[in-house]
Image 1 (cartoon, rainbow, N blue to C red):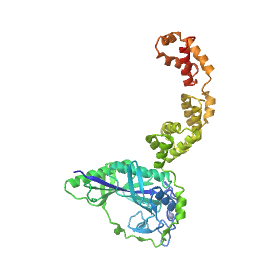
Image 2: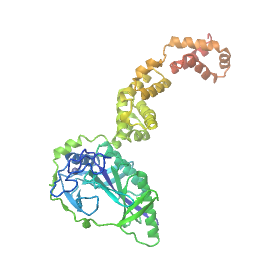
Image 3: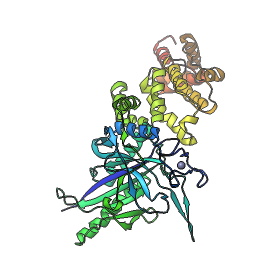
Image 4: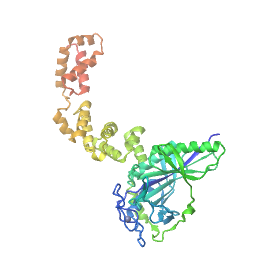
Length: 472
Ligand SMILES: [Zn+2]
């Protein structure tokens, strides 16, 4: 009989506020150590916390986006422990009464239930050198939400897929920038094994994983490690472990403490957080359409394939760019192809962010209209697109400057076609003798004659007509 893995994730996301959770210090990343600090986040005696309204708003927005119940009353508690990066000797976190409860995240055919979303402050950072450790408190007191899932995940790949989807929702809602390299998003994984249908086994917790790939590898390692212990008749110890990416393994950090070890109690310096229903409703109005909803709409309204819809919605900026392009072009299918194939290629090749990209949805939409109206051909359109990406010039300007406009004048195409047939009597004979493959050659000659600007459909039609009429 096999073992079944039971996995739940606790995701910490840094909220995208300008200032910290309980003081006015800046939250920007990368400042010189200990420059974004004040008496509150340094925990000077008598300094009092003042809650950041924006942080609460972002937490509520994320709670709504994941279908959580937003609690009208939530309570900040002190989680007491000592660590050198924690000047107060406690972390302020919502314990018994979090801001969001219930909720779920859909991913493909999978539903992951959420236990809770709560607001808390981050700790500072330790930097270890060979003979000493240094403390940087710039991060101390920056606002986080912790999103705790039920143990609904059964494999490393499911866990990575759920984490990916959660990051997407965080970025769509603007709650978090999703920057995992800067530590804006990190994840703890609870992993245990059981026989299918049996009660939950003892779990280990892998802390602070900051990449999808590491998360999958850490969970795979844990499943193997626990399987080996259980198969040999051993027992799993409840503990906290760290993943070492270089070694590809997890290592024991400490045996896991229970929540009563932290001596939680409501912070006497902070009032119960009371949220009016009207505020929740106004925040609800700011939640954008999420990836899942956009994918459904693209498939339904625009007849775009599931795979293309997934690619177009992976990033909110790209999804917005696509929608604006489709509206300008009045041709969603073509807009989807251009964004998916060309825009993403250019951004990727140049390592450019969408914000710095010179082509706007209006420009791309007008380029598509030029194609659809027959003003330019497909080959010329690619040239216009590359030039737009390079120079940022308007499509019409480029068509004009480079003489790329398509010739759709039947008389002009016919004149050129006659000239081509006259010059190639042998090929005309071969065609009429039944060697119909020669047709493509003659159309090619016509396109060459017209420097690639002939309307391709008309060029085909005219050549065929002339070859088949006995007079030509
Ligand atoms: Zn401060």
